[in-house]
Length: 265
Image (tube, rainbow, N blue to C red):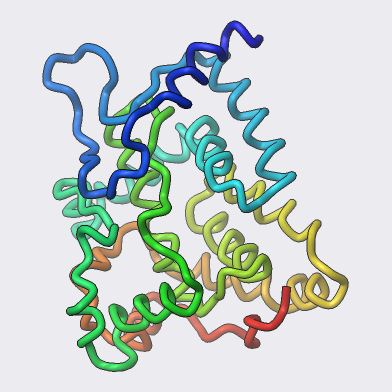
């Protein structure tokens, strides 16, 4: 098994430029049809993918904040689901435009000054507030590496880059309880195995009070909103910065959370 994974791990560890801004890593197919399909692509066999999936799942369950392992798990287990999501985007005018234009979300593509100047309550201003309050950056999303289709690679990259947008829409912080609630919403919305795994096993680390609140109030709320809202990957968020967050929530059918979860964990 070690021999099967050695070339993959060697390329993974030695991959240059992993920290480059997202805008410098376009997900487009090679014109010559040879070699990697897109920037950072690492071709792997089905057996290698299975071994990577098992290892990354174990590490992600042990430490949910190992975002690199969560990313590997998503890429090695989500091929069929990604095709379903891609087809949903193709059938939606806004989603199809996203697939065509391939927008990326990073500090190099965001006009932070413009977002700061937007009115209070607008999507752009509230998204920027979320980044500031929770001390997170859109540049932390790992590039796609193990998806053997460049369009599907973009779909999962887009999912990662709008994750913080979902926190903003749902009003959830980045503590473990907030992340679990967002994972339940994403599991219902996307069906990605990675999201389902995180939704079911994430609560293991919660205390009794937080677990009770999660099961009795927050999970039913997340499931209800996930089912009611249209596919959130079909939203061209970058063209909706000026829209009020309240209006966008009403458009999507997303209701306010049943409680404030910032102080719970």
